[in-house]
Image (cartoon, rainbow, N blue to C red):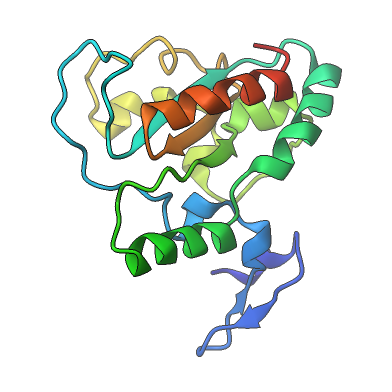
Length: 186
């Protein structure tokens, strides 16, 4: 990991090659380990309340319409973001109990360039593909001729995404009111 990546927080460890490592309590859980996602059972659409997938995942895309309110809402959401430390503990729990059906709920949030710009974070990250904006701008260079979903088809209309994984559909449904309370812009 480049040292400049660690500058936003204090490093907590050093790798065997001398590289500074960040505090895993300050890194979202899906960055290093990926949120627990077991094999999916076979299911038919549409899902009903009796369906029970072994793991459930949803992406909630959003647009920031009221920046001041979003900043307040984000302060209430940050404490429930799953850290890498918690994810490691969750994965160990699944492994040690030899169970893939534990109802562990994990949360993360991410922002594209347009979302960071909306939040007045204008620093370049050093990744030319990210720094130029949406990858929709590079479709032709990437050889991607597929039609994009409207969430991704325009440059800058999506300001972020919340990722939620759960041990079941019910885990997500139980979390949904908390998500809506945390982020009143929805």
